[in-house]
Structure formats: structure tokens, C-alpha cells
Image 1 (cartoon, rainbow, N blue to C red):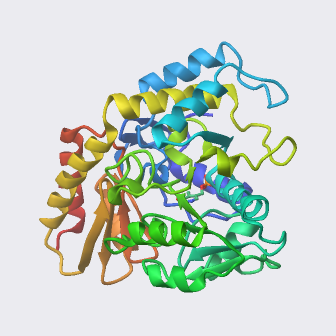
Image 2: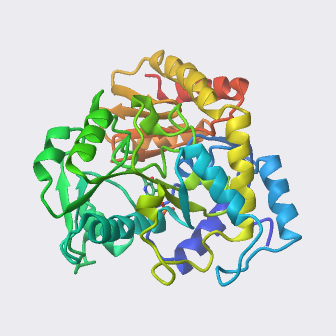
Length: 399
Ligand SMILES: *Cc1c(COP(=O)(O)O)cnc(C)c1O
């Protein structure tokens, strides 16, 4: 169907689709790089990038070509059989993270679930915690996905209401406070799960030294440090992984979003053999996890990340962006924070009017937690386009 208006498309979606999202009133029918177009031919800069799943922009030509090439060979085998690219994918992602083993899944939530299972099994098999007693420490205002176990960790009532009974085995501590982690550890603690920057909570950057302090505590107390880098990973914050900002290596990485190159859901848990080795045949799996099409796009995405030095791009373009944002005069802007190209602009009030103004000026962004607008354009946005986007943002936000 072509030629339909945005209104018609939105009405149909609202009528037949469940209302588990309150999407902005913009319909995207085409995307290229950092630009998207709606049915009426209006053009926007995409400054959300599908929550960092589009670090390479829309339809990166080389990733699209890799997908097309694989579409002509084989797309799905299941793990009942071997496929050609899974070994390449695991080896390359292992090299990128400095880890020995990779377990492929599809969505970020599945990656987090896999990390929880990893930690519990490691706790039982390696650390000797009684099965059923394993406890995982997580952080207030976390976002790790939407499954039942994951929302058990959530402190956001909207995400939890009506979904009980929940899962046992989690302890919540304040984010940004290493002492709180230390105090929460017991003999049954197997892991500490955290986001190096809390994205959905409103781009909350922890105090300097937090990651290093938590690393030291996890090592000394013999628990796994699990970094959920689903949103922060793959150059978004100006380092290949956000933990690198403090030269910290977690025991386990959970990765997703950008790993799929903007084309496929691809996620993974990455760790050394003494940790991921706890899985044996039949203990975990996924029909689509590590499928040939996913491996083809992820391999190309990782090649581009390194070859084109995406971390440097995120640092340079992030600095350019923040400088432009700081030049905007608006006494309702409370704080501009973030790292690399993951930037939050916090207002003294609900920011949804500003989000609507941004859209009418041709900039797509979305507020998180009412008062903070997240800006996270594709990492490879050309400087001229970034400057143009900044002009439009100034027009929308200046008072
Ligand atoms: C998006 C996100 C997830 C969940 O990923 P899905 O692919 O939506 O399941 C998990 N953790 C973090 C930090 C995220 O930003």
C-alpha cells in the first residue's frame, strides 16, 4: 500500500496493534544515513537512532550489501547444524572485547537473561553457592529489558504493575555508589549487573571512579562484574565499550542493539572460558541466535567500527554537538550531560513540548523520564549534517 497519509497509518496501527508504546506522531517510511522521510515527504534528522541500534545510520551501504549477499546463500540453519559464519562472528567479537567466548542471542533482553543464567550457573558450579540461593545485585533505575525476570529488577512501577509474581534472587542498590554494592554482597552473591551509563533512566553518568571501584570490589569479593552495554557499547560513548572510559574490563559483557548493524536483532553475551564454559549442550539456546544472516551483518558492522574508528568519531562529533548545545540560550535547560554521542539535555520541566517543537523543526528525538531529551544520532553522521541538525535544534529550543 502506498500513498497513505501519516494519519491513516497511525490510526490503523493504533486500531490493530497493542498499545504498549506511546509513539510520537511521526511515520518513517524511508531512511538513509541520519535522515528519514515521512509519507508527506517531510525530512527529519534521526537523533534517536533507535536507542543506539542505528550507530551506523539507516541502511549503511556496506552492511546492506553484506546482508544481500548472505540472503542469496543461506539465512537460517538453527543450531541443530553448524553454519559457516558463526565461528567468524564469535572470534571477531571475542577479539573486539578481549574475551574468549561468545554466546549469540537476538534481542538485548535475551542477552541479559542469558547473562543472568550465566551468573547463576557460575555461582553454583564454580563458586559453590547452593542452587536456588544465587543472588544478583542490580541498580536502582536500571533498564535491562522487558522479560519477567528482568522487570523483577526494575524499580519503575509502570514496567512492573500487574505482572507479578516476579523472580527471586535480586538485590537493588543505589546507582553510582560503590559502597552500596560492597554492603549488599553476601556469601550467596554471584554477580553485580549494571549499565556503565544509565540510558533509559535519563543518561545518568556515574561519578568518576565508579566503574574502577566496582571492578575492584567484584574482584576482591569474588563475584562477576556484568556490564549491560546493549546501549552504550560499540562506540556510542566515545570508547568501543563504555567501561573502557575507566580502563575497566567487566567479567561479562551483554551486547546488542548496534551489533545488528541496524538491520537485524543480534545480541550476545561475551566472557572468558571459565565463565561461559558453564553452559553445556541443552542448557540454553535460541532458534535464531547466531543465524547466518545475523552473523553476516554483525561481522560487517564490527569491521566498519574498527576500520573507520567509530569511537574517535563519537568523541569528536560528540564534542562538536555538546558545544553547539551549550550555545543555546534557554533558562529551562537545567543540565547537558553524557559522553561521546550519548547526550541528555535535562529541562526544569516536562520536555514533551520541546520534543514536538524539535519534530516540527525536522529533528527526531524523544524524552526519557519526562524532563530529559536524549540525543544520540548515528555515530557516522557527517559534520555538515550534524551542524544543520544543531541549527534546527537551536531554532526549536532557544527562548
Ligand atoms: C535496549 C536495552 C536492553 C533491551 O534490549 P531489547 O533488544 O529491547 O530487548 C537492555 N539493556 C539496555 C541497557 C538497553 O538499552
